[in-house]
Image (cartoon, rainbow, N blue to C red; front, side):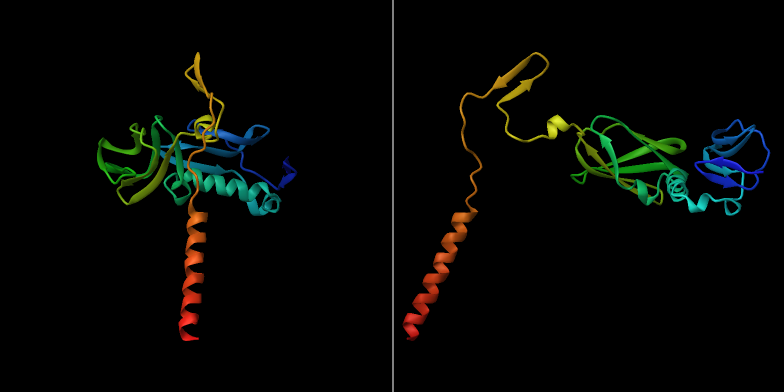
Length: 207
């Protein structure tokens, strides 16, 4: 029989009951088609039909599903090497194998050893107050993550006429003063004038 989802036709599917360990992502009548979950801390994605016996590979949703499934099945892959964490919030990362020790290298090069007892496949790091790129080394895994403010107001460095200080106060500007004047144009002009003078002086001596 054919089952339609997102204009996709499936020739046949297996008639099974939804497992207790998984979450049904797609189902047809009383049988699940796609299930995702964890078995013994091992992530699993189960598809109850032959994708080659369907029109799914011809749809844009198929490569998107594959990419998301690969990233979810392997959280320590290179796709997660650019993790971003808000400053002050803990980093929670799953590993493909259990480890007993891990190491965090902060942006200034300082190293901090983490002891995991018992050997765990998940790392929870709460000391994310220093902004910058950190490196996590756990077994054979090396993951980089960035601690960022992720605050659009604090990241806005444009000059303001008033700067709020907390919820009920603020500081207003009463004068305008120019700062951080760029001097490179004047230095470049002086260097150019010196080169022109040197060229003129050299040709005057050899004339």
